[in-house]
Length: 308
Image 1 (tube, helix red, strand yellow):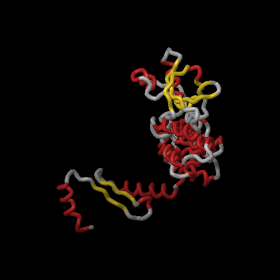
Image 2: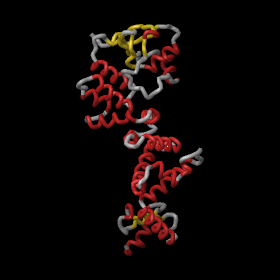
Image 3: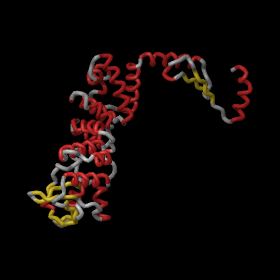
Image 4: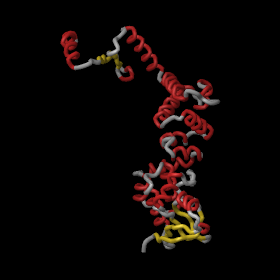
């Protein structure tokens, strides 16, 4: 007997509880894309429900259910009813299958699914966990769960990929006030995932050297980023990153400044460029010369090859 049976139910009998939901951090308000799809094609994936004392408990499809209530004047809604004998493992399988129809789980959805498996099952299905959450070990799964300790706006940003999971793992280790400050800073500067990682790496070095928090460091050295509206955000962010790098790598910054000064003194033509060794780890330099064509290069090479 299949786990799911198509049924028509009164919308008033369906209770949108969150006990099985992976979307506790996400608005269940339907967007135009979903409503247009239902209007044009009909309902491709009905909400999944199971019997409960008050009627029916929603398992999956809160946004779909709300879209149907918005679009359909009829009080009855097409649903998929879970067999009353289905156990927690069966329902979790349905939750995973339904969500994966929309694509891979976000880090927050994956964390919710892991937590749900741990709450509902004495021995969660390892294969199901690995497939649904794209993890290969319990260590990875436990690490993902720590993201649920973050505040709701931060969890929402991670789900929407405005913050990376790696940023979330860093923030969860900070005191609440500190991580909220960093989150607000990232939001105001609209930092992408690479810039977030770069900022946190540099900030960790400079704050360790000065023995202070990120918030205190920013207020003391870059107060303009901590209050009021910001103009020219991309340029300001670029300068901030440059100054953080100078403070965190002073030897590198001095070497770069001296090298740039020496190169400028040579008054090289525009088609020439001198490059230092990586991170100035040695005195070696590389000369790059751009030629219009191979013949120009060949003539130049014939003149200089004996002196190299």
